[in-house]
Length: 230
Image 1 (cartoon, rainbow, N blue to C red):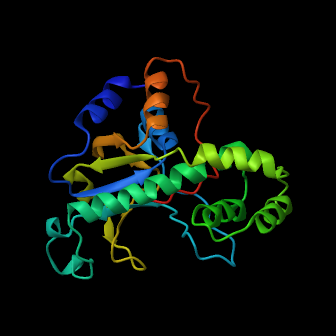
Image 2 (cartoon, rainbow, N blue to C red; image 1 turned 60 degrees about the vertical axis):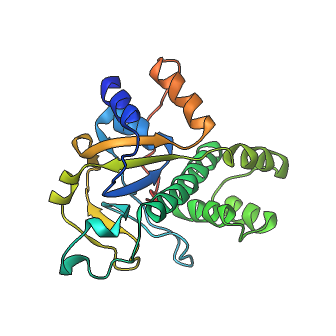
Image 3 (tube, rainbow, N blue to C red; image 1 turned 90 degrees about the horizontal axis):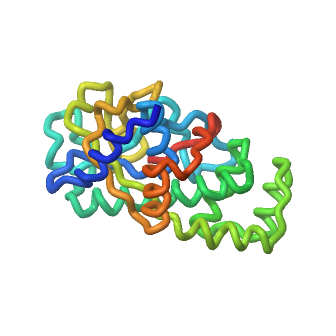
């Protein structure tokens, strides 16, 4: 059952003046959180010859406000103020939203296809290489279709989610490969009790959320093979 009171409260709260840390993701993750009570993590890795995105597995990654973290455990954290924290979260929210939309349109099923879309997001792959890679994974799409999907995907900006301080009771650490991130262990997804507020980043997200709240948007469920990039 959709728990709209929780969702409405999170949206009304938005992002606070003094956040602990922030997580950027696509709106599909928010729908999943609303319906099932947990913010999903990534569940698959990437192809062996790519290092653009990392498999997040049982973890969620958050951009922290460094001044909120004290002690030796956090001494390797890069210095990040609220502005930098928000910028990082926005970047990953937009990235995830872009990939999510294209993956759903193309019906992506493999790790490699998500990685290819990641390369497309940062502009490091051309049409021929992309088409070849998608075809290798059973996806056939014309340049015209892909151009249309791409333009739509670029309108997606994602969602920024702020956890409450209770999240620190979960196992967490400074990400080993990213001193600008806190990795939180949540193998079954992050329980809704740890959510403080959220902010929609784009007009498309606002329109989709409005329809969702009114029961006019059919959400068919979170794909089990979707990777999550904080």
